[in-house]
Image (cartoon, rainbow, N blue to C red; front, side, top):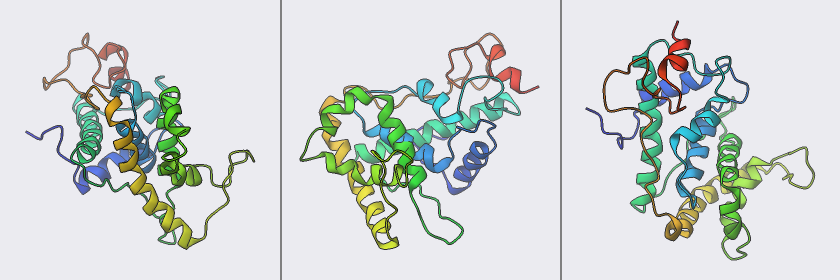
Length: 230
C-alpha cells in the first residue's frame, strides 16, 4: 500500500495534470498553480485543511463546475494523489530540504513561473491576516518578492504591476523563489503548532452513499461526487 507521504511518480503527476486540465471551471488550477498554492499553505503560519483548499483548486463546489469523476475508485485515487503531493511538499520542508517547484515551460521551452507564483499568492491570500507580520518585516519580507514579481507581471492594476523581466532576470527570480520558500517556512515554523496536512481520503476502500464524500466537501457522497459519476 502506498504511503500518503510518498511523492508522486512522473506518471501520477501526468495523471493529476490531465485531471486538472479536464475541469470545466475557468478558475480551476493547473498543476503548476496548484503546486504553488499548496506550497504557500505548507509554509504559512496557519493550518489550512485540504477540505478547505479543495474548492480553490477545482474552481468551485457546484455540480456544474465540480470534478466529474468516472467512478468512486477514481475519486479516491485522485484525492489520494492530492494528499500525497501536499504531504510531500510539507515533508520536504520539514526535513530542511529544498523544495523545487513544478514550473511548466512554454512553447519555446522557457520556464515562466507565473502560474506557480499566482498559486502561491492565492494561498497567501487564504490566510492574509496571518501573513501581515511577515509582509511588514523589512528584513525578511524580501523572500516573497520573486513570487509577487511573477504573480503580478503586467498586472492591469498599476499599483501592483511588475514589468516583465528579461530571460536572465526571470531565471534569477525562479532561483530566488526556491530559496524564498525555505526562508518563509523557517520564519513561520514557531507559529506552526499542528500538522500541515491531513488526508483527503478515508481509510476504507469503499464509500457508502450516505457517508462523507472523499473530496472533503463535507457533503454526503450521494449529494456530491456520486451525482457526477452518472
